[in-house]
Length: 604
Image (cartoon, rainbow, N blue to C red):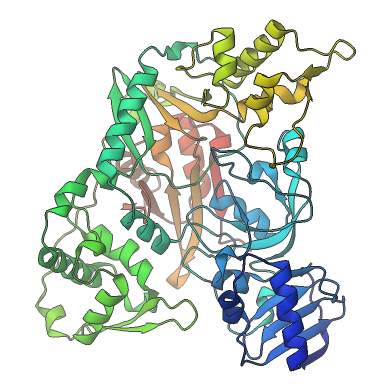
């Protein structure tokens, strides 16, 4: 809707009566927004302006501020909040979450939201009807990136096999409405020019509020061990292509069962949770200050300022902590990152200010003449290495290329009745073809093929609950039949996705879809290029070993850094060697091309 520039025909202030009428319209249209929410968006004592565009759209804004709402036809029947409004009141609308941050490129590029790009929660697709206003979020980032209307009901979506268009986008971050005001801003560090990723500050706050991770880890490990004792992975033969890699940034903990490593969604930082609980707040304060001074000496450059506090913490302070030590601001006497930074500013070490829009504390200067700074002797900080993986480069090239990636699925509670009915093992993993065979075996067993149309399967109570329970809006009628072509995909969609990675004699099964490798080239200061490579752990490639290889192969410097806000490491290679890196991964490590994503940000 805002892809082309449209000039305003008229711009005027709203009268008191019109402001009251607008608030009534908003209250009726968005019942989830409280009076305080509306006050935050349209302050009662502020002047509200309306810009009437040539395409009949009316845009409402606080005078001298950002646009908060737009009315498609100018009559109040199709009124939407802007992303600026949603960044202040993020729960104003229900929202779909994308499968990963990379999917946001398509939304920001002007595409509508398709069902394959949505992350479906374990409880199933949320309930909605056609024409409802929904927002879109990226996993790990609380700020919505777009707003639009649903194109169909939940029932129709399930019948369609979760294919097709889910949301018709009306407005998104980066469009001309977002650009229409001076001082347009982004709500957090996850909002980049052409993609929206996780917000490091949000991930840190979520991590601090987690329950006892150690207990979670033990529970999950016990459950996994019980569920896979009798699993025979040799039955996994067919490689099934999925819809793409998910980049949810999930932390993983590995437990060894015989020769097989099984991972689940548990933060590795929980391993030291009990140790850090026994540390005094004064000791944590000392460690915090030491890490800050180390970062200011080693990695924080004046040319990088101003710098958001969340970026300082995740990209500079955390990597300076001693190996194996958990650094938690909540365990210090400061409790909050902002208070800690302001305390150091009061001592004269740094200068900070609060962003008037995001309210985040920003580092604006470093006093390198400060006595505390000059008396500190920085240590040579070794890069913290990941858990040792098999190093295919250390052996012959033949073993380095021996890689197999298979997408597999584990029965969930939704499908357990069908597996029990046909006597299939609910504790093993299945390929898509094997899972489809199970449901069709049930159809044959119960004689559910429609006699008058062999392409239709009639749903009995068990199969209907298996496919649609929890996915149908309360009060709506359940389907009575399904087309054979949709049966397999719908059944698989109710199972838990995993993927099996085998390299030589080592195998590992992980939850979720395959997370691909990302290679990106970008410009740094002085028109220099740097190529960044991440996601190697998925394919059992040691980042340190690869960095050493690339240093010799490309005749350039390489470094390995810990990714901020999530588990994993990133290899940095000086120069624009994006094609060489992709070719090296395919030829030397046998990684399929479909799992390698390249992005050259130096090209216009």
